[in-house]
Amino acid sequence: MSVVVVGASGAVGSLVVSGLVERGMAVRATSRTPQTLSLPSDVKVFAADLNEPASFEPALAGADRVFLYADLEDPGALVAQLVRSGIRDVVLLSSSAVTLPGASDDFNGSRFLRVERAIEASGLGYTFLRPGGFASNAARWSWSVKGESAVPLPYPEAVQVPIHEADIADVALVALTGDTLRGAKPLLTGPERLTLREQVATIGEVIGRTVSVIEQTEAESVAMLSQYVPEVWVRQIVKDWREAVGAEPAVSGEYARIMGRAGRTFREWVGDHVELFR
Image (tube, rainbow, N blue to C red):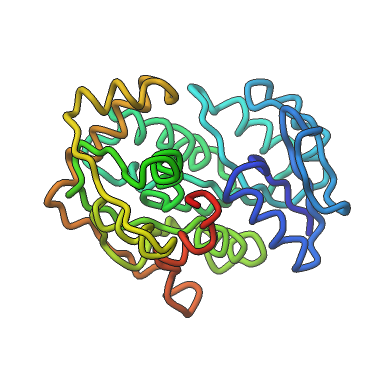
């Protein structure tokens, strides 16, 4: 069986590639800039652009399944290309945002919902992975942890259930190498609720020094984040934090059910990426 990984340079996609190779699968990876990919030598790499669906034709020819991350205003043409190429199943990296009230009108929810709906309407087999907030979002704090042993935040009591990217890749690999998750839409979260303040403290504990929170106003946070994050994302990030204060987000048991073991903790994520903060 041959699998095409679209988004092979991403945190999840790169782990999916390595996991498939370890399982002896025939793997193809696509990128707009394939020369920048650092992948195992037996992975076939193709140049392809999500905005030009026909560019995927060589990569898709004769393949069976696709791991897909796609942020497109109109995903219909890409999905049609998958169908024309004879793809049987798509494992989509979607988002838990599609399950929230008003998802169709929400920036984050709507962009994933468009792709889900296009795939469902196509008749392709599918698995929609719906992870919540990534633990890797804490990487945004690396500069301030390194330089100031502090993290500026407007809503430090915002509650999240951060998931390790390796947990998402684990479930993707189950879906790509078998049929048990065909038609499933697993909600994936980490194993524990943590406030942003608790996440900051955990980073400090792992690196062996105190890391504090510097409380900001929302306006100060927007101004700071806007220096290196697109405005539409800044507003989404701050909105999510604001709405998560005092919340009790779901702690999903889907990872444990599928994998037969507990998901990785935020502390484990920090340990796996400790070089970001030292």
